[in-house]
Image 1: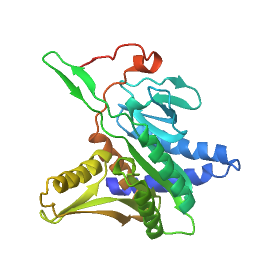
Image 2: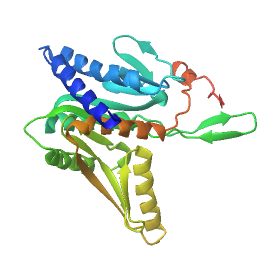
Image 3: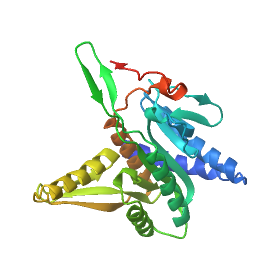
Length: 281
C-alpha cells in the first residue's frame, strides 16, 4: 500500500466518523463532535511544534476573533492564555485557522469566508526585535492562513463554490484577507493557481504571503511603469474524490513549512505599559 492508498482509506474513515458525529441532533454539540474528529487527526499527524485547538484568538489590544473551529498555533513558544473548553490564544503565535462544515452550501461557505476575513484583519504586521549572539535584527511574522473544509456538498457543486468564492474575493478586494483554499471530502479542492507564461510553469499558490507578494510586485511594476510579468492567477478546481483529504493535508503542510512566527510578547497582552520584549535566539 502506498501513501495515496493510505490517505484514501483515512478519508473513508474520517468521513464515516464525521457522519457518525452528525448523529447528534443539537447543532452546537454536532459541530463540536465534527471538529473534534479533525482536531484529533491533526494533533496526531502534524509535527509536534504545531498545536491544534478550538477557540478564540486575541490581540494585544484585547480584540477577539469569533470562536474558530480549529486554530493551528506554535506549540513551542506560544502560551495558551485561557485553557477552558474554548481556548484563548495570542494572535502572534497563530499560523492560521480552519473552518469546518458538515454540509458546504453557499451560505455556509460565505459564513466561513467572512469569519476568515475578520480573523485575518486582526493579524499584526509590526516588526519584532530579534537578538542573537552575533547580531540584532528585526523580523516580521508570516501572514496567517484561513482554510475551509466541508464534509459534503449541499445541492451545489464545486463549480458553484468557485463562483461563490470568486464573488467574495471581489467583495473583499484585498488579497491579505482572502480564504486560501477550500476542500470538500469526496469531491475535491479549490485553491489559487499561479501560471507563469514566461517560464512555462504552473503551481499552487497557497500561502497568504505568496498571494500578497504576487499582487504587490504587479502594483510596484505598474507604479514604476515597468513591463508586467506574464503571470496569471486563477481559482482552480481539482476533482479528487477520495484523494481530497490527502491533498488538503499536503496543502496544509506546505503552507506551514513556509511560515515563520516570532514568539508572542506576552507582556504586551497582560500589561501594555511594559516595554517591548527583545526576542533572543
